[in-house]
Image (cartoon, rainbow over the protein chains, first blue to last red):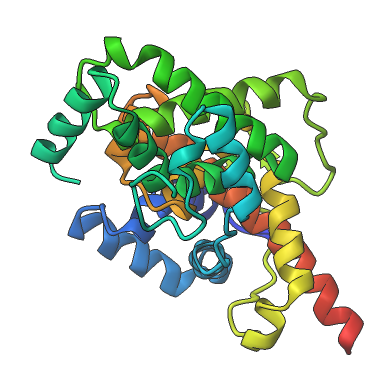
Length: 98
Length: 198
């Protein structure tokens, strides 16, 4: 995976571990494979950057603010579904509106 | 909602209880809208998918056999509706900056800018978030659906597989490819942004 010159064996190692880095981040790999990846990262700067930035990428997406559904979208939904008497903007009640 | 609650709700829905229909909408519409918006990037399309999802669910509730939870079932209907909409749109553009794909479909990273240690104010500013959303929208639909369900909506691998009717290994493979593509894209963005501020 490296952009800098690597010998063939090193390059093959990078590709081998690359296949597992997503599961490595999710914590679903065996301890043995985790140890191997960590040992590889200690000697391969590019793989270390890929793993760290991949982890950061996932974290940044998880921290995106959740878009709220506008009240008017919900109101139109209830109308389309023929449930208008049950519409409440606060989403807290299931009783028909007065 | 527990399995028992789900069973009671299904019984009420199948009996045509209008209050149960409204409750189902109240409890799930926000999630479905958010999912559709993440998948499609357009508020108008997201609203269409939201309406299609519940219209379709109400139409087929009689045949619901509770092999999955109601919420997973709704997610599946919504995801399929969003994917159908995506397939009708223009073909995916392939950027020259995308990671190299080998013959067996493996993605090989080629961006090595380490943006991990940038200040939070740089990582979380509006422009960076807008770039993140554009990057999702440019993922192929098959990768986008897995990434949105798994990494943004927080479904487990198993739930994502069930929702998309995929094998566990297909979910893992697509998730990895989606993450790698997004990482490449963010690496380029943050490298350029950092260069400009110097």
